[in-house]
Amino acid sequence: MSAPGPRIAPGGRRQIGLLNTAVVRVAGAVIGRPVPNVFTTLARHPGLFRRWLVFAGGLMPGGKLLREETELAILRVAHNTDCAYEWDHHERIGRRAGLTAAEIERVRNEATGGADWSGRKRLVLRAADALHADGVIGDALWAELAAAFDERELIELCLLIGHYEMLAMTLNTLRVQLDPPPRGQAAGAHARGGRRRSSLT
Image 1 (cartoon, rainbow, N blue to C red):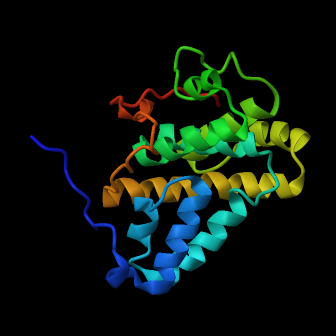
Image 2: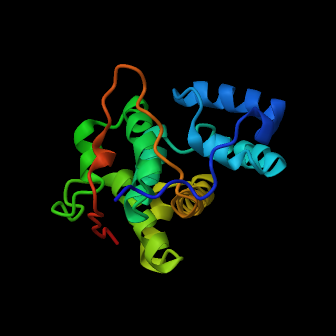
């Protein structure tokens, strides 16, 4: 039995327009994929796509958090939501941002229970888990976060996690297909099936 295809197929130039075609190519070059399916799919809603891209770019890569913290949060969201597309992109981007292969694997390794994480990285993961599970960060965890992050970082962390939860829901629901791996690179760990969720809250 073949895997289900996309519910809304990626658009070509006729469907997304000349402007969005150019925007998609530039945005794809930034993340290292020529024509990412996430962009060509969302660009079928042309005006909304461009507004979303500005907002998303303000969070990543234009945010105040350390880049490796941002990628850690996104990878945890991808794991928690079982979003293979999000994981595929950010596993590679996370390495470029400074995360090690071992750290990336530990994001979804339930055996660690968070013991291998410390400092701000552990707090980022706990925040992602809390918002995914409960839709809110409780007072005890918030106190720890507030002692480690400034106000702008705290606001950004909430928006970052919420945004990538929203994006994962959209990608999973629209069944956006994985992009081919960049030239010369084999398909990554996203090909493994099943969610391996742990909680750090």
